[in-house]
Structures are given as structure tokens and as C-alpha cells.
Amino acid sequence: MKCPVCKTFELRPTMIEELLPAMGCEQCKGSLVGLLYYRHWAEHHKPSSDTSAPATVAELPADTTSALRCPKCERIMTKYRLTGTVANRLDVCSICDEAWLDGGEWQLLEQLQLSDKLPAVLSDTWQRKIRNESSERTRQEILRRDLGSEDAGKVETIRSWLKGHPAKSTILTYLYRN
Ligand SMILES: [Zn+2]
Ligand SMILES: [Zn+2]
Image (cartoon, rainbow, N blue to C red; front, side, top):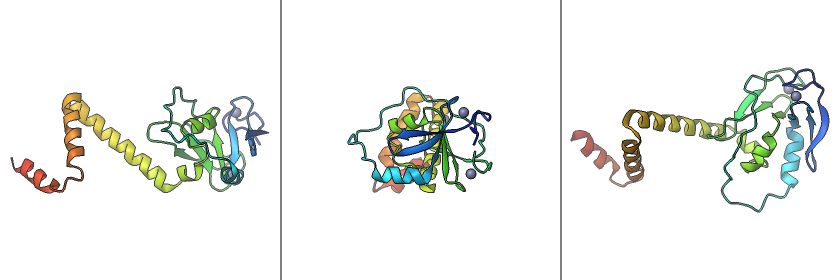
């Protein structure tokens, strides 16, 4: 089985974590993880006791942005975003139930405290949430570009104040008419 990124290098058995086997590429340090093994590992691994907010990731590992073919079945793998702020994406073959991690992406998952939450990350709910966050950020950027950051900040303050305000529609109607 060849590395889907380097194409010519043969993947070899390796361990990502204790009890988490994978097929790794010595050239690009990427690895193919069987999601069956992964789910077993995630169920039995002790969750980190550190529940503080995820640390900000200083340096992102290189992400393969081109489409990858599954090393097992040659089908194009599906890309999944991890969060709304991190550009790295995971490549998954749902037929073979395998995920490709580029070199350093496992460590990235750990930093984001997502290494034991892959099934949630690959769910429609998670992916939809990320898309919503991205379009929200785009709208805010457009607002800042059009109004300048000071006025855009005011608009954001008013918006969060209005959100959930019991008289929201009265206030909006008043503003609109004046
Ligand atoms: Zn490789
Ligand atoms: Zn496949």
C-alpha cells in the first residue's frame, strides 16, 4: 500500500499511540488510521484530565490541500475541517473506514483536544457548525471592511445586547422607522 501523498513510498505498520496502530509513511510522516482501531482506542484511552480551554496552536502542520486517493481502494477521500479557525483538514475514506493524517496532524488534534473526539468531528452536526462559524466570520470581516473596526465593534456590541433581549423586535422596529 503506497502513501497517498508521496505516491511511491510504501506505508509501513507503526503506532500513533500505545494501542493505536496505523500505517505510516517514513517520507512525509503521514499515517493512515483505521477508524475501527481508532474507536476502540478512543473508548479505552483515559481522557486527559486537563479540561481547560484548548491551547492556541502556535504552528500548524502542513496540510495536503489536494484531493487524496484512499491507499486501499483508490477512491477520492472526503475532506473534513477540524475547527472554524484551523485550516487543516482530515481525509477520510468512508468505504474503507480509514482516515489519513498528514505528518503532525495527530499532535494538532491533541493540542485542540480533539484526538479522542474524531467521530464527533466527522459528524454532520460538527461540520455544519464549522461552516456557520466560517460564514459568520466572513460577515464580520465584510462589516469591518465597510465600516472600519470601531463602528463594526459598536454594531457587534449592539447585536449581542439585542440578542435575547425581550423587547428585541420593538427596538428594531423603532430603529428602522427612525
Ligand atoms: Zn508520504
Ligand atoms: Zn478506501
